[in-house]
Image (cartoon, rainbow, N blue to C red; front, side, top):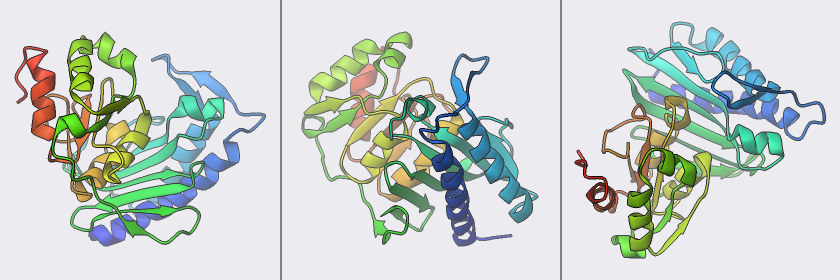
Length: 268
């Protein structure tokens, strides 16, 4: 069985293949866009990226399960690759640069390897359990170890809440407003990027509703290996809860307390 160093090396090669496919379709005049049954958009770029990743895994890890946004799969025991071929498809199809391919390896449901590769931003982040969190400029920048901030008080914290509509539709608008009022600064930075800014220490807290496991699985090990904490908004560990709260770790319990003091539900 391969060790995590081998799996991480493979994940980085998968990211190279993903970047080649996605970059070729970004801002393409003939980009094909469809609407899926859940009313979210999908492009031919999304599908090309996931096919390329699956083709490599079929050769390199034929016994591993795969769960991907575009071609499906179910939560599986043992080793499972979890793929969001283009996180931020709306940005991608509008020609905005904030999108990335997210590639994770989970073992018994726990993500242990994660890569987020954003070629239009010229940056890639990765991490594996026990091996730290890293980032580098693309295409061939020198890797640098990254770490979360040392901010200890919410009143000094810089937070991101991603999509306001998600909080409102979930009935969590009042808790969000309470958190933003308690914080130093707040911004709505979207998709994978806000989590990577937490891992780099540029943000202190990010929270989000209405998520799938492929939105989060690659991000969790990067944030955690950078020294942060990654749970659902109810404090559940892992990427399976449908919501996310990533912090520098020092603020996690205080943030959960603020949110749940305004929902009436326990933080744990």
